[in-house]
Figure (tube, rainbow, N blue to C red):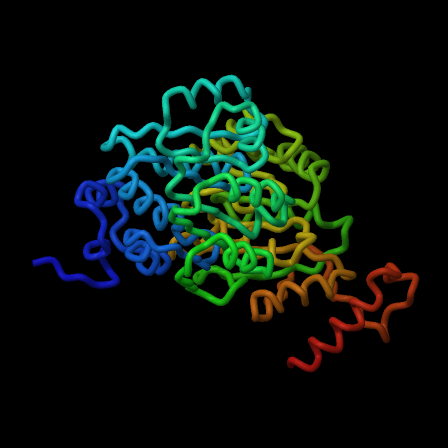
Length: 408
């Protein structure tokens, strides 16, 4: 007799065929969000799943959706914020849809729309789409929304951050009211709760960790370094960490510049950002997964769109504009319960930015030093003049110093 515990997918309502697939893929133990969300979703209830990036949410909504579609007519619709995430969600679902003969379709920008329209002629049971491209195809009358009986909003907070709220609300008005809705997100801002209250039916809220917290098993450190020495420090760190490295920059131009710098150091590296074509982004991501490239240099467009296991290091060459993106960036390592490491490079005037990140993750990040790089500290008001600190950062540095001193 099989025991039903947190250490098994058995007893969650998953069909035997899907259990075999999970076993074949090497998934033995459900993550917390999978353990809590799957039984609720299989019952057909609306659900709000709050969990950090990298905790296995695709399986948490994918298997219940496929089982529901196997029992009734209609189709499933999954909305995601980025092209990369759409492709990865579709690839993950295909491993379970094959047994049912279900077709899937991916509707994303940056790819020839004619090819996507052709895929819709095969009457796919599941559509994975970015909101903008889906609205375009709906406008051309190539897809119907009146037979959607399962709707998933994946990475809902990211979609809102990217300005998709009008498209999401338009799509929500087009799909039938009598449907199951599953909303998954790492954070739950007020706008999401407003969508949930208006468009969902008594949703069950499943929160695995406080909104905005990071995955367990990720160690962190920060190096305070002058801007003109960041490249030298980067070179030293890439000598120390010889495994896969996902490096984040703040801008597209910065990503290209750092990619050239890393390539000049003799490392295999690719870049992924909004100025790259979809084909270039696919090639970069596949090359990173296969080992062709040891390092992937990315902007925040990839913070939630990269599902690669065993990333040794996430390196924030630039701190993110939005402190919440720090959680999504470092969530690319230490996925699904594994250990990982994250390093951030901060300049002396970024003390307030670090403090804002620490407020989000509810912990202090240790500050490290490198023997080859001159030691720096965050500006302290009594030691720095206005000429040393950019005017816009002076108050932030002052606030950071006093807050940090009180914590000690």
